[in-house]
View 1 (tube, helix red, strand yellow):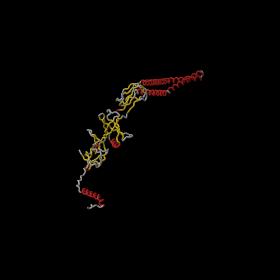
View 2 (cartoon, rainbow, N blue to C red):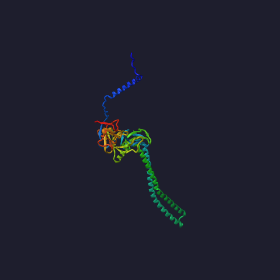
View 3 (cartoon, rainbow, N blue to C red):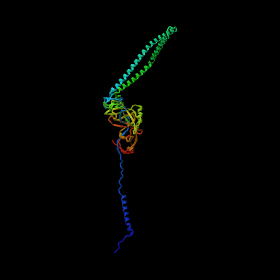
View 4 (spheres, helix red, strand yellow):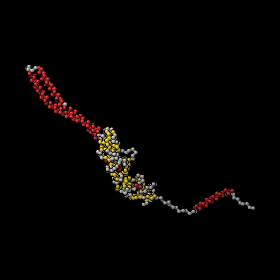
Length: 418
């Protein structure tokens, strides 16, 4: 019996490795000899957009603002005296004309005071008349007393001559001299009274003027019992009631001037240079709607300061039509019309990205970012709005996309569709 041939130990150990190498070689040959697929280019993704071709326009830009009606002339009428409220002629919300009676205070106390002052003046007038009569009487009496004094002096001279010849006693001469001197004193007193007349009259005149001032004051106080409208206004509130006892300074009612209403709107700080230049050249007008009716306004002035927390300055508009029923506190959307400009481009609002950027189409319909300056807005009669922009980069005929893309970026490929 023949023995079965046996492999050497080395070959037995190498056999698995040889099998593995043979398998790898076969796999490699199969991989290299397989059919190769044709390479295909992936299609370029493009985003659908709409676009328009730019054409320059000449237009008057409009600036849209948010404003509120306010009454700068808000007046609180108070009592100037102590009196009872007799009648109240108006109600809250009433429109009144200048001079209308609003409230009546009890006038009796003021009338009593006025009559007392008038009586005091009448007494002074009587004293003045008596002073004039006294002066006229003194002047007439002065002439008589001067004549009597001349007669007395002649009598004294005769008495002196008779006494020298011992034809008259010393006692009779002394009596004659005494009479002459007494008459001289009376004449001097009369002359002094006449000289003092201007001073007495000036004193009485001053008292008369003081009495007249008190009468005027009492008449003014009486007139203040009738509370009248100081201007064409509207009643805001009634702060008292019939029968109340008011004291000086007590609030009676509040009203505002209908002819001096204004609208306050905040202007963004970026627009201030444009508005200042426009105000220096011409009047600027604005439009709003109140209860469906057009309201015309004119920019009156800019506020003197920027308030804390404000991003702009307040603009004050004057109402052109004072008959419009605008109420303080009402808010409106206001369209401020700026001076006309040339070389602007009108775009739909969807063409803007942010506040100063849009995209135009360049080669291969790719996007290019362009910064622009917003000149304002304009609104057509059908309500369609457009944004007016200017730029030193844009040219007539440039195509601008009007679609809002969330991933818009320079170089992005797009496809223009209708």
